Length: 218
Picture (cartoon, rainbow, N blue to C red):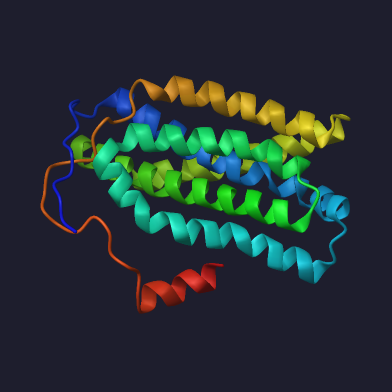
């Protein structure tokens, strides 16, 4: 399948750089916010270490299933719509990770979590490439640095809220509220397109070394 990608209607500038940084921060925040809640999920569902490890694989499976489709979605709808959609799904799914109390429902919630993380990861990197190219400067390391900062904020923030006596659900709702505020802030200057028009495949099945490295990352 080949098609032409949509060209952004706005030449990326400083505002778009800020929104890109926010997207990376939000992604790191959402991913790491789940980490302090893993022991609560293990106790709530009654899992042993082996079962918990298998259940957590659902995150990687969800990401691997969703990532190859993100190029198609971004070419059709643009970076902005895909990032906002994945961010909204992430915000809806995080509280479910605190509420699910059976292995099956938790597995489904983790699959959705992984898929949302995979989609936002690919879409924000597409935006980052476009913004970096327009700036004429090397910016990618800075963008990914914000992902790490978001990860520290997510894990540290939720841990701090739990330490202060908040319930896991209250802690994750507070985190989701912050994510929503940041998404709304970034919304205006996320790119509505997906780069310069070009012919080429929008979806290619991963194979060879890509598949091997992907399974290692699980």
